[in-house]
Image (spheres, rainbow, N blue to C red):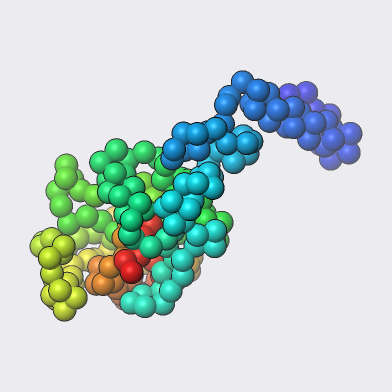
Length: 225
């Protein structure tokens, strides 16, 4: 676009006019739709926002779900019903546009300078859960793979809370190639897809804290009721 001298008021108004014109043209030639249900939504500016029907169906919260037990967390909603089914689908199809819609409220909540640390999967790379890393991508914040699995663990779906706590003991370590981040003062949020008993999240948070890092809590898609 054509612009005038830097700091010129006329130039600023001209740039604002061009931006508005560009938005109008996008609305004319690109039909905006809800990323989840694909139905048409009113304006292009809401492209990353789920429509009202999907927001209600999935139980997404405008201000995100917050809590302090078993760890401090912020979640998009309760892990039940349609949101549970959508998260399970995301594990298979890894649709980033849907993920951005689900994490819309989380993006509004997180500080711009937050550093995200995805929890690594216990499975092999081919079968690993990719959602934590994709959630970081959808949130649009800096992410670092500070954690690594340092010993094998078993699947936790059928374990009790006590068994999960034992299963996750000393399961994480700081990745050797990320040791320099141990002196960082940037507030960190650990990222996972679901918060259940909190055994995995607590172990991840404690590992980072033991390395001298400031950890604010966990970001996740769903919290089990």
